[in-house]
Length: 326
Ligand code: HPA
Ligand code: ZN
Image 1 (cartoon, rainbow, N blue to C red):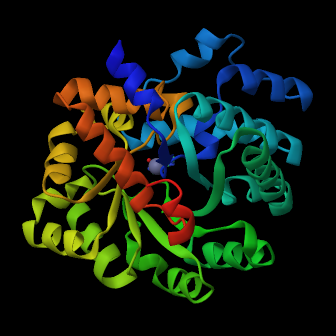
Image 2 (cartoon, rainbow, N blue to C red):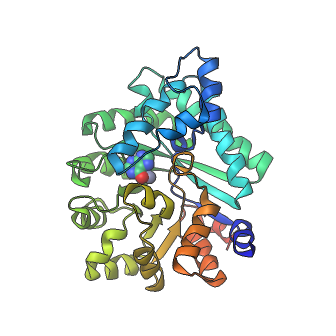
């Protein structure tokens, strides 16, 4: 349809994308064969049959074990490169990609393999695809604050390759304040800051308030439960905070896209963006997320253009580089 063509053709930035969430079953089989790993599921359909998520926890229970096939720098390169090729087809011209180093270092994979492979793909994207690609180091919030700090120290030699830090994984009993010291140190090192405030978590709006007021994030991932507190919405608007929403992901972990919340915030003039989160698992890359939201909420082409403009304005591009896009 023309809506699909329009949505895919729009030049856009993707700001909420977990590289480990781009692992398609076909590549998983290739990497398993390369590394001599036996997989329980033998066919693409059998793998996809395990994608039966009812909430964040059941998604994460599938997401982490799949990463065992990622071992060498080449593996991480190939994963990111496959994503970047898909992103190109979806109109992505700039991307800030999350990666979860602790999910790899905790099973014995050197930090250097992870970032070395991902960085090689990012550099190649610039020269071969015309996509500018940056990396955001995400801490796992269900690991300790000490483990996060150790990971931040491991990352410092690679500082030039990392634009910011984020926080993901299981939010329950892992509020933002647990990582206040880690994020203060990251900020002092010059990193941009973002944190996940996942959809409909216990105490969601309190966590959103904490990331804004205590942590001082530059952006919020998901975060649409902010609609429960109009004063906080006003503050986020005044600060021009970006929100990286993920409609199709929402429909997997909560059974709805949360289109009313996303579009409501967009209409109020907040810097709302649309992203894919874990596209291999949720079956939709960023262009497909624009289409899904547009169809659900009856968005116009003008609305889609606004979402694309927001994606650059909420990005961490320097003003000079941003000016090349908007
Ligand atoms: N939320 C929390 N952890 C995650 C997500 C998410 O959306 N995607 C990958 N890890
Ligand atoms: Zn996410």
